[in-house]
Length: 83
Image 1 (spheres, rainbow, N blue to C red):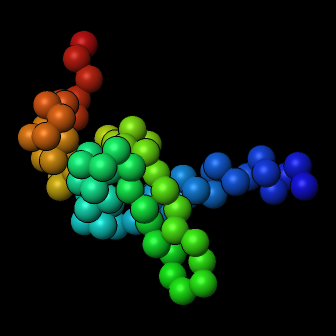
Image 2: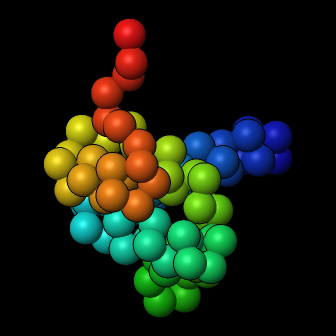
């Protein structure tokens, strides 16, 4: 089905966007070490694998302080854009 396949990628991203900051950062830490990280959805459902770059982009676009602090420390990224 064309619609289902077109919606597959956005659905995967919604899983990341729905995570609280702490679990999202744990996923990023795992991805930083291994290159990718698995998000387990529950019994009977397969784990979803995300690359480090994808998780990093989600964390970078979140307004929470915990994520901002981690990005500054580990990736040497500023949360603010330079003018």
